[in-house]
Amino acid sequence: MNRKKVQWTAAIALLLFCGAAYLYNGVLYKEARNIEKEEAAHRLAASQLLDAYKRDLSASDQSYLNKTIEVSGKVTQVSDSLLTLDSGITCTFGKMLSENIVGAKVTLKGRCIGFDELMEEVKLDQCTLIQ
Amino acid sequence: MKLQKTRLLLWIPLLLGALSANAQKYITKTGSVKFEASVPSFEEVAAENKSTSAVLETATGDFAALTLMKGFRFKLALMEEHFNENYVESDKYPKASFKGKIEGFDASKVTTAEKAFTITGELTLHGKTKKVSSTAKISKSGAGYKITGSFMVKPEDFAIEIPKIVSKKVANDIAVDYNFVLNKQ
Image 1 (cartoon, helix red, strand yellow):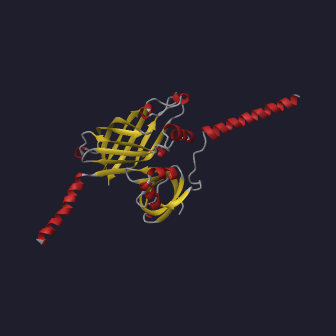
Image 2 (image 1 turned 135 degrees about the vertical axis):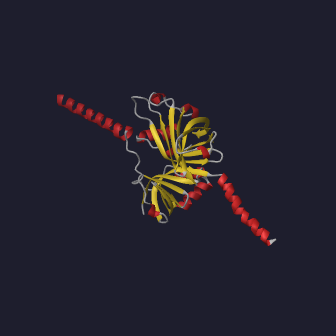
Image 3 (image 1 turned 90 degrees about the horizontal axis):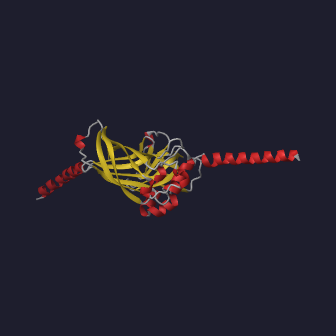
């Protein structure tokens, strides 16, 4: 009888502890998305993405906004941690980039954060180079 | 006659050159916009967007900026999620934009020493537009201009409802800091 009580208490305590740990790590202080490790929802050419946004902004937001996407194109500009693909997709990286990749054809992965109407550019953040 | 025509043609690039010298645009794609809505002794409520675009027309003092809401990064993933999903609804309203004027801007009077100017204009976010005014420090930075400053906004001005349960942890007056280094286009 007494032993059973102890077992029950232990089980409940364990459950409470797991619940609290889950709440703490899984909800309150959960890890941010890791775009680098996420599977891309879309794979397309930089020009395709830009055209889609210029044609229909809200429909493109529906399909691409906040999604991890893989984009290929020619690097037209590099400054610090910013890379521009085909003069229309601005990609932010977490680290400084070397300027000698200007002109190269690359594929990169990042999260689409929307269309910048001031610059007429699509923006991606948390980018990583794939090749 | 033919000579006259060629002469006329020669004038065109000169005229265009003069026009473009008048309408000089300075831009940035990496402007920083930070906001701070922390309340002392509670978890820090702050985020920064380092990829804000801005355009300054030096001839007129016209200034415009655009920032994508999803580009605001928080220290805590949950806070970022709440910000995007519940507060600014960034799926529905993906951007915040400002359009205004730097009062009395005169490019020839701006030096490497910071000078105070007043920027007034309209800030649009979460589908609402409000007039804002800010004292900005403007200085020459290399061949471009540096503009920094801050202003205060209230969530209710933009129809952003802070649930009662967290309202004590989010400031009523939110400080927005900006920092732009604009270079010639």
